[in-house]
Length: 274
Image (cartoon, rainbow, N blue to C red; front, side, top):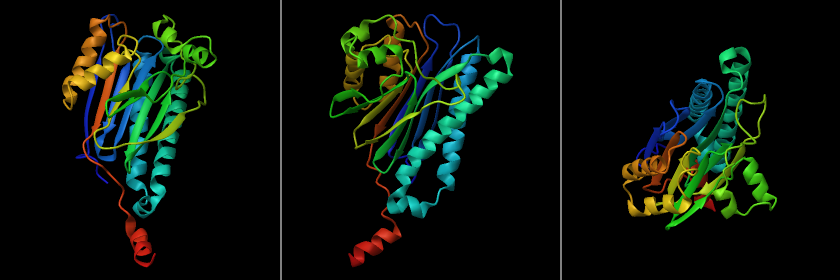
């Protein structure tokens, strides 16, 4: 299914007010409903090498898999689970490539990247992330963070040492406990979420939530209702107006129409004789 007319979107990235170059990377293939965002780190220019490898690898592998996949199997109902597996496996492959590159090229030693990716299919979305790049959903004006950061601060929240409110004021928000490329293997967190017409999906690097409170992100989306280009630009502006201490990247997708998978020939035959 081609999702080009089902999903409106904007992708923006900015260096910020402090950094001298941008280590974030964004990529998408709207037709298959794929978006990838990565926030690189480690060594001068090496961070952007890591994030670039991550985005390109995931896009290339997922696109190839989606185009190769047996359409009959997708339409019979097994396709969505395969989409989730394909997304996870592509990220695992990206991790190996980044790790091997860091070991083989001195200028890339120690590089890594966080990553968040989503793949829409059959009124649902597969979500995969490593690190503290985030994904949010807004539905019926309710704004919620879907991914939980792989960070030391989030671990302390989970163990009861901090409340979420205390954590939001902490200055130690950027110590990630998981990233692509740092080790030969990595655990990719995946989940599935239902999606409906009118929903917004926001993906961002930590340069946005570190500078802009969730309430203000929510207010921005609500205020500029349906004008996703304006929403994206305003979110970047808010981050920079509040200090812009890091690169900031934003991917915003609005579901403009439902996109159920076709029932498939087998399902139609079952319905005739069911």
